[in-house]
Length: 184
Image (cartoon, rainbow, N blue to C red; front, side):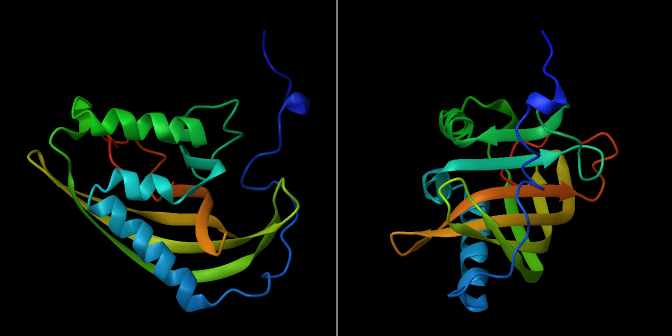
């Protein structure tokens, strides 16, 4: 039985109107959070990286540009919070062969921009941020350079910044993608 597009929740990247940047956000704090998220991924600190996410989190890496509705088309990654946790448990077993041994990674973030706010399901306003990135992956098979644009939605929970949404649009996602077994 197929779902009708009218029965689906809105696309996560366009859900809700973009409003002004919410009060109380300092650019430096946002940058430090994004740098920390990248460092945790680079260092394969799976517990630390997973702890950054909210309970209602979405992590999406579409194919073919900005992607179609992720519930009706294939994505490289489309994870909710439960799937993020499952993915981290699998990686930590050491038996996820795409990452055995783990890649050596380094992310570089730039062009970090506070875009606006989006109302979340709890009625608060998440900060929407975008950034360009380059990630160098080094493996026994050679080096791979990944690049793209990431959209983040972050919120404060008990005074801590948390990640509610991450969409990674790879610049070459219209081509065959080699194994993407790490945290992009």
